[in-house]
Image (cartoon, rainbow, N blue to C red; front, side):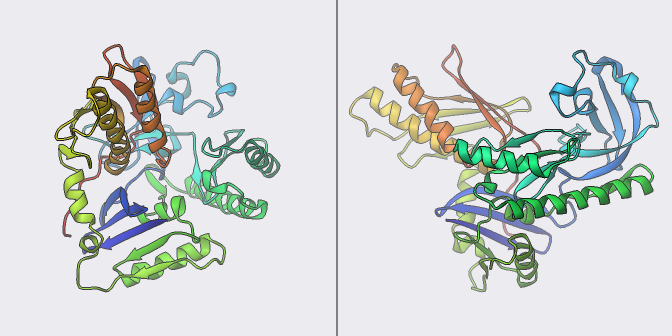
Length: 397
């Protein structure tokens, strides 16, 4: 069971996701500052940099957006030229084109944009010109994967691309078709606005933070949405009812005197989980350091002495740490290169088990990630896609 807890303050909205009562995601969105990832713009090319195979494009934000050659070529790898052409052959200063933001502006860097357009719906991701069908890797049964792939091939036109999402497992063909029709209509509206607008111009903004989460994870059979703002709760109910095609969503308005995040223990948990030093349930602890280039997590036994011998103590601490690291990288939305310094283990079987535990614990993470394995120095390497600034707990807003 999942609980989506939403607190609406005067200047921001904060969201926490609980799975079986455990905090796994947190996000905050300022009322006057909405994220750009997923949004479409008509941009004007300002500079083409042949040496970088990239261009800087004005999309109407404070910093020019960055467009790399790979994001300009055909989205289907098989239809790209074997040798990349010079970007100066494809773009000229002053040229206007429709772009989608795939990565927020972070620090001194502007947003990263692409022409590999994608529009996420409830059951699928629609790519107007990708030319292929894919099925979420998290759908394990080959028979169901084949069924969804056949549905996708039957519904799409030759130039279109579709990705059937994890939640599409066992979805009816009619529901997928209706989702596709809505996304095609949305894309048509973006193209029409693009024809009429002068660059730079915003063409389409993605859903709000709360709506994205409802679209991506909410299941009416098991999940509950709890909000302390009646007006937004009404909007959320209408959004879910439309998305779920008549199924009654479970939305509850919280009215108690105790602040919502305090009642569910979220504030206290956030205070602990965003510290540099995070204690593990068994007495060990993690030390979490983030630099511009990467995140380093150090695992320590601390007060944990529960094993029968040193190797057993180390192994049990590392397994507990792997589960907690998986939860925390998702909660903190940690992206980029992540290095974990687990406590040294002499058993190869234990090393494999710790890596497998981390992989299994990351199954619920919707953000793309990849565990690369152990280095020669005994460190575990992984990457996780970074699209936004890491969240900052706003406290009582």
